[in-house]
Length: 116
Length: 474
Image (cartoon, rainbow over all chains, first blue to last red; front, side, top):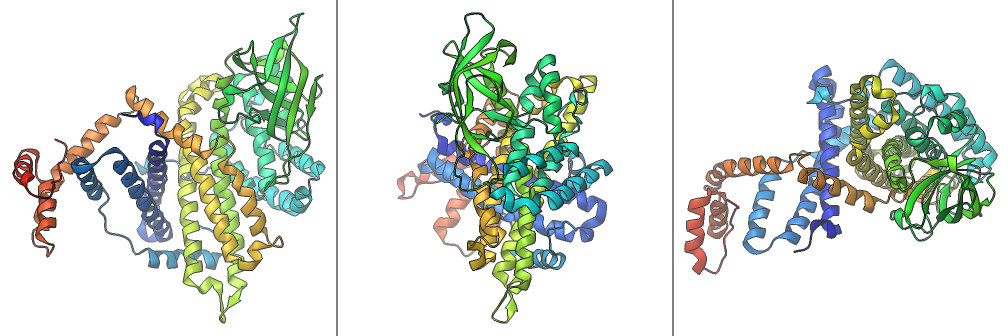
């Protein structure tokens, strides 16, 4: 079996998952900190941006995970790993179309990026 | 926990003041001079480096005793972020303050620091970092430039060439890497006027045209022995460690640049009409603006979270925070985060400038509007400070190494996760029963959701069937 460090594509896909996880977690923590200070209503725009970001990030993470699993397992093991992945990536999607409309309205009105 | 994370909402009065100073400098000094700098009028670029130094924007990472400000890493990131209004200048300034100055801050002797740092911090001398060669970049240890001790033992004689050196056209000080005795990779402090040192012709680049990029030619270049930086044979520590700071600053600058790009795109979208409406009213344009805004929010969150963690760790050093070797070690602990910021930031800004050209439509493709220049300028971010490919390998490599040495409890986390998955699956199996899915699918899901032993029995029994069954690890 090839050592993982010799499989650059696998290393790269795991890095992609790590990067998106860090980005997503940082956005969520920032939004939570804002919500603790200003209440959910006081930071609706920040929450909307966080939801849009994590929706995209989860898609990227799931796709990278499928690539890695398919390269590392086959047959029954592949199917069981995919079942676990499906379980881990099971979530009710946000209405990102409406969220993006709200975010856009806010930044267009302000003429710039803003948090609140 | 959210309260433990540093965010832009936690900026102090001083942070906000510096952000304002940097932003004003960018708007009043950099932006009006973009066209001149694009035409390679380096005297203007040079003057702006001086002005940035006078305002205290260049010496943030330099200790006070050597003419710097020695401020926290949050400040360092804020300045890189707010100055990012023009790639050509950001590159010049970034190379000068970061990879051109920090090797001395972290590895220089007292004499070396005293001699060179005040000039670098004030902007009187511009710094540069010469690691790449025509045939070695990320694999810098394979460099061909050689250094030999002179017969009288007073100089090292350097021979070779260096490629794509940012600021080479006007820098006064270069951190140059070469191999001593054939294999000992070593850093040297090389002044522009040293005998045998010359700078080649300017490269014609796709972007960041306002910055200078030239090769260096070392032809029996005489470098005094006291200008060896760090230890002989330990140049790789210097070469790779200072890149961490370069990477987090680059990540912050990419976020700042995105903020700048979206402002231009919004202004354009609000006045450009199509089908009787301004294009800012169209869903597909609004979708792009929202994606960029969401990305900036996440980018700011992770950039300032990272530098906030660094500052907290440096504060833990107590009195030792004056000891640059200790500070460097602390920053090294965040190498993964620095690489993440670099890769994420450089790819996010690529997305932003691409969509910006699209929003400007035909005008995005001509030089009249900044979208075209931004599109070209940001491309290099995925290449320098370690390619994104190398940084990706570093990210996963570091994580695996730390997991193997027990520094990172990865295996324990995997076990915990697997326990959770296995505990929760039976609930899912129950929920599946009333669905209208076909029998095969239902049975497959049910089997994979059962605890280990009954599942094994079912799997064994079904071995004779045409279908194979999902087996979860026990």
